[in-house]
Image (cartoon, rainbow, N blue to C red; front, side, top):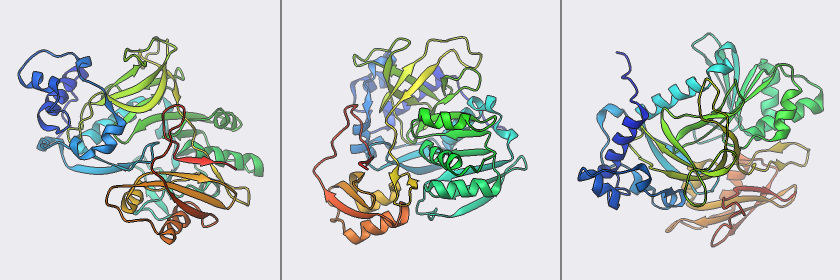
Length: 402
């Protein structure tokens, strides 16, 4: 049976608003929701913004009391974003399917299917032990190697061994790989780099230009929303995934920004009725572009603004991207956390415990750092009353003082 057609964004938005007004504990008590249930007219901007901190603090109130059976199974995904606050996000099969369609639409010009050997570097987790490599066949006859590690040397060695022409990874991992390539003089056959989750540095793009015929395709999204924008192969700007979400860029006054201005990223996913988010303010910023002549989309984003996650330095000169799987942070009872490298050998874990959580044992934390970061670091847990925000208003989960 063929998949049902995807509704037009305006129709899908109206359906999502109606669903949230009836079935979301967070939204149904708001004044606009009563208007919707009573059949009164409503403009989109009558709905107030949903701050990320509200979602973090009251996640369960965003879970729908009812999800239509045609939306399929519900899956839990975990994220800590850039805040260090673990969050369980519930999503439906329908959301995943439409999000995938948007990925394919916006990546069409990059000719991903032309590549037969792909490496996907993933952060380790409960089901992905650190250092594990899984080899998978692709439908087009190609092959993918999934590496569960954030060690740039491990990624570099795998790329060298399998001769992949396409890599998918955090920008910080890829930058480390390209730095190793330059340092060792060992060329890699990379032709396409796909990045996500972090800001792509100018240095990464410079290093990529050092490889013949290598292009960088950056994508920006969030677990809560799915794909938000993707870089265009034709014009180089970013285009919104506007067939599965509504993207707004708002100034401090709440009005849409003009071309060239930086605005707050606000998204409304259209097809995840398991956990509706209406006008969700993620906490990131982006710059609105001015060009409207690209055949792929009349809307352009020129820059995703954010703070690059610092790489931690090891005594032997290698660099690793610090991380702690969100499910591990939840199990430890962490409400917020931040990893700070103070010397080549020492890390501090600043943390806020969730209400009712047991105090952390230093030995348990050391085992987590050994497993997910590097056994070369000694960690010192520091319980604090709160994690200070950066001047931009965002949390920095990782900071190297070395």
